[in-house]
Length: 107
Image (cartoon, rainbow, N blue to C red; front, side, top):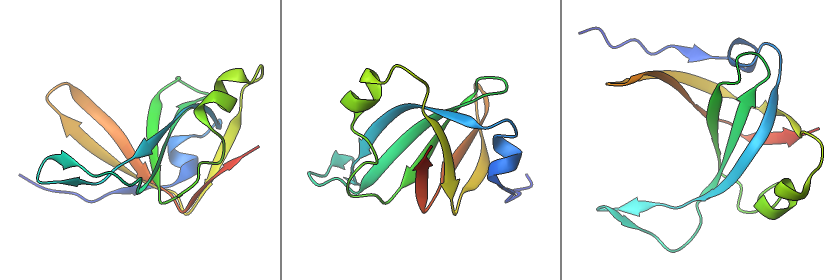
């Protein structure tokens, strides 16, 4: 089996841009047990073309916006990311993209 390590840019994953769909805290897991302190945040974004969801992991200790603030927004929140790196992964159900970024930027 060939294990390719292909890295994708923001423009390759989101050629028409993206909207913020959800914000979730991310916790460390040690031996299958969730740690108590938040290690960063996951920003779930949706592609404007195709509406695919991608989770972007950041090391933010404070989210750019709370989940409650996002839910109260009446308009879509457009996002970009600084230092974005996307990677393709495969599961028994198909392919997906995971990503990390230095920062998610809200427009």
